[in-house]
Image 1 (cartoon, one colour):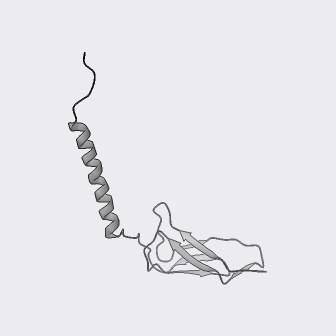
Image 2: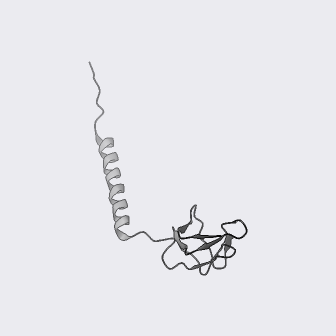
Image 3: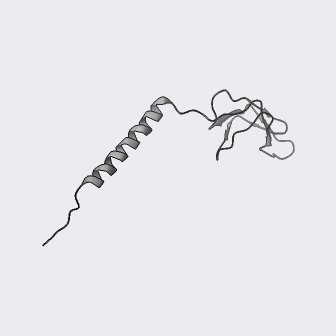
Length: 103
């Protein structure tokens, strides 16, 4: 029996990135079941990572070292802007006189 179509995404989480030659069996279908016309992809690794999926044994093999994606400059700019806003807010709160009722 063949399962046709669909997409399998490999999500590299927790800081794990495969190195060249790393292999992982990711599915163990029943005997006689095969996957056909399935698309494979990945997340949390930079573009250019190459891998192979052996459809008979459903084994993922890295063909080169995966590297972490580098944030875009706009992302870094937004992070810096947010940090500056937090610093300014904290400084303003520190400089404000203590308010309280004194009678």
